[in-house]
Image (cartoon, rainbow, N blue to C red):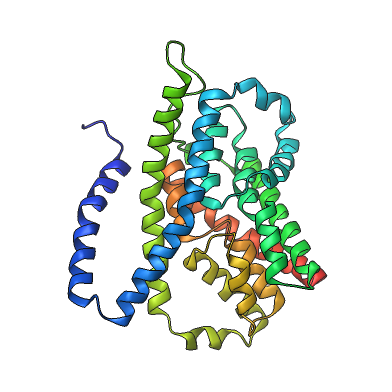
Length: 320
């Protein structure tokens, strides 16, 4: 027991304390409108993330158990600087949200893919897949420029972050929770798939719940008047909606409809909301910290936020 990672002890402590605290709060103040709103938002975020978390962890387990390492060496360019944009463009094939991309990126690293390319895929997959682009077109009818701006800004963010990792990233920042690399002789591939899927889902699910609780707290605590105060300034509105995307933690398949409803903000600010949200939000920060380590998550998420805002301003200013 003494050899367990500290994060496992934190998860066990949370599993023991949080349900009791929730029962106490909901039992005492369960009829209060604020508590009901908090409960609704928290559950909606968790339920939104669940199917895609299942998809991502299942795909992660399948990659570890069934896909030979030589497949990735053949598909991706050998030079990491070229592998980054190719991996970013490959994000269009995974119809999931950010919860699915983290365990898949972790498996890719475990299979020998350079971390820079895996991180480019992690950022692009929830932002440029066909489901997200289709919902964006539906949410902004008659505005193909918004769809194009989201696609280009998201791809640029993924590529720039991958190249930044090649330039500035350090191995000591990265603590991938990789169980093993590939199939082990004497073990059934289906057994490895099942054990890997169970491990990843239970491990990642706890961090998704923590992020959902934090986002729900923000939703309840911040009044509508605060949102109205920032809509008048072009740059403040961009920064505010970037921060709002981080704390609301809306699934990337649904964030376009929320962005379209923010009619008091400029098109560039709403684009920023849709570009930042899929690459940095509270549940994703928690999930990255649990998977790759807090040292990585703090640096990577901070840099990703800055890059996503700048790419949104660039492409939004040109196209919108």
